[in-house]
Image (cartoon, rainbow, N blue to C red):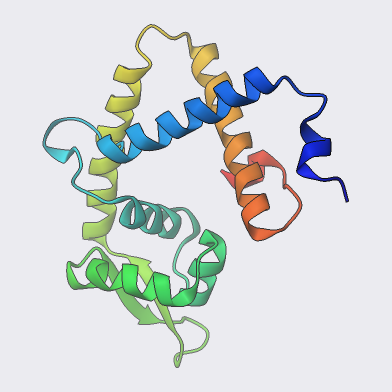
Length: 168
């Protein structure tokens, strides 16, 4: 297995330093703004809640274990993160349609409306931040960022990188 030193010997160290610095700046700024959006909706939904609601919206009702596996976190973390979403009525617990003993989490109508409100605000933020970019530049940035996130996820889970299109 190649060492990290072997992997970087043929790469430009200055470029790698610049890349890691920009990623660090991005992480700090993203956390500072929480990429929350604009207007009254800004910063009104934390990252964990947004990602959980988004996954339930895209993939439909599922159990805690499936939700945790899909997000690359453990079940206890999902349980802790989902509890306030259930308490505020954004997510509801229902019986599994095929196994009435099992419980699945489902986006409630209130959760769907709130998620769309946050998405709309975040779309507006992205439009503002990338004002002056061409559509092609936005697409390229999105493609590269998706590829980067997919590679980070694969590294974290120890799995080989998957097709970036499948990760979105």
